[in-house]
Each structure stands twice: as structure tokens, then as C-alpha cells.
Length: 155
Image (cartoon, rainbow, N blue to C red; front, top):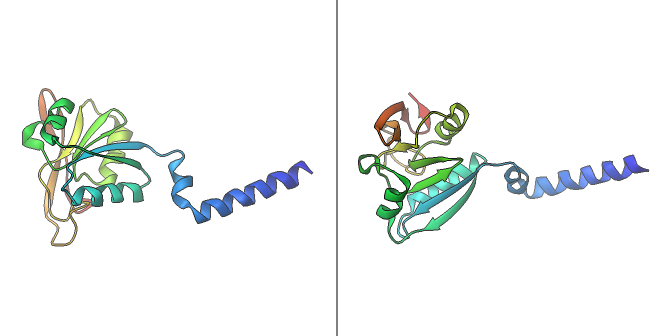
């Protein structure tokens, strides 16, 4: 009888997960806290891409993004429109989900990872011809390259 109950529970869970796939994926997902301006639309597009990649994203609207970036240690030269906190790192701008996954897997000695500016074709900035752009690891001593990308693919 206990096996019938377990099988039934398993079927119920599978049906629930099929109806609400985000819930099942979110249970073990890494959380991102994204700080953004109240007027920026591409930030929401980036957070949607991160959710599609399996992350749980909390969006916080900030009135003063420059002070948030300063508090979190983002160098002005690497600045973009939104700033995210994820598993001990800062992720600045339109960094692809695959690059975030690599960052979290390799765990380099850095404060964070940045996609400076708003590169055309990067996650959240789709819609035109994708340009090649460089990602940078950064810390208090400066920045170093983390790879070149076109859209959401490494070059």
C-alpha cells in the first residue's frame, strides 16, 4: 500500500511540475538580485533571459544606480545599466547566462564580471546586428578579460 501512495504522489508532483515548470526548476536554482533603474526596459529583458536559463531573479528598482554600483565596487569604466548580485559575485550589465554559469563554476578570484556599456545583440539587447564585445573580471586592482562574445555565444 505504501508503494501505491508513493507512486501516486510522484504522479501528482509530475503533473504539478508540468503545469508549473518554473516552480520545479526554481527549487534548486541560484538566486540573482538585480538592481535596475525604474526607466530601463532592457534590464527586464536580461532578467527574463536569466530566468529562462534557470536562475531565480529578484528585481529591485533603485532611484540612484550610481550609488548602488559604487557600494558594490563596480568600476565606472565597466558600468552598464543594471547591476546584479549572484552567489558572492557582482554581475554588471548584459552578461550572457553561459558566462555567469562559467563564473560560478570556475569561481575566479574577482569581485565580479562585467559587460561594459550596452552591447548590441547581447542578452536583453537583441533585435539588431550583434556586435562582438568583451567581458571583464574585475576587482579593486583592475580588470582582466574573461572572453569575447557575440550575442550569447563565445567568439
